[in-house]
Image (cartoon, rainbow, N blue to C red; front, side, top):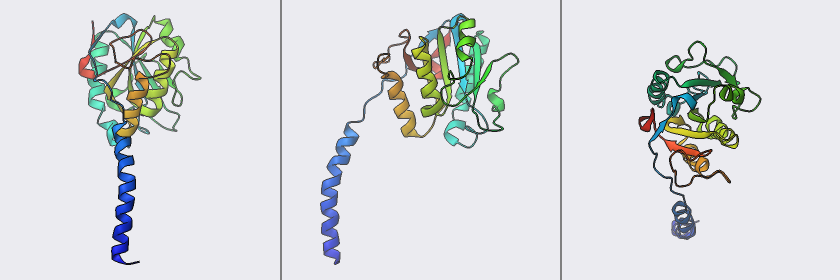
Length: 208
C-alpha cells in the first residue's frame, strides 16, 4: 500500500471516529461540587472501608487519601463519633497503622457490600445511628456497594470525596452513581437529604 493511500485511509477513519468520540465526551454528566455538612455525633458513624495492606498499600491513589482520612478520623473520634471498620477477605490483610482501629472499634469482614453477611446493620442500629460517613477503597467496590446498602436500609450517607479512591474513571462513575441511585437519588447534591447520599469532603465535614 502506498504512503498516499495510507494517508487517505487514516484521514477517512479520523473523519468517522472523531465526531463520535467528541460527542461521547460532550455527553459525560456533570457532578455537583462537594458540600458542607454538620453532623450530630450521637447519631453518626464513621465507616473506614478496606484501608489495608492488600487493597490500599499497593495503590498510590489510595495511599494519597490516607492523610485526609486520618484528619477526618481524628475529628470524628474527638467528637465521640462511633467508628466502624471493614476489612477485605484478602488473606493476611491488615489495617494501615495510620488509621488502625482502637480498642472496642467494631470490624466487619466482607467483600464489596459490607452489610452483606455481616452484623454491620446490627452494630449501627444498636447505637442509634442514622447517618454514616464513608471513606475507603475501592470507590467502585466497597464504597459504592456499601453506600447502596446503607441507603436502601434508610441511613443518610455522606461520602468524603478525598477519602475514596480507585482509578479516576471509576471514582467519577461512583460519584455520579451514588447521587443518581434510582428511587433514592439526590442529583443536585442537597446536603443531608434523609436516606440519600451527600458528596462532601474532609474539610467540609464537621461534627456539632
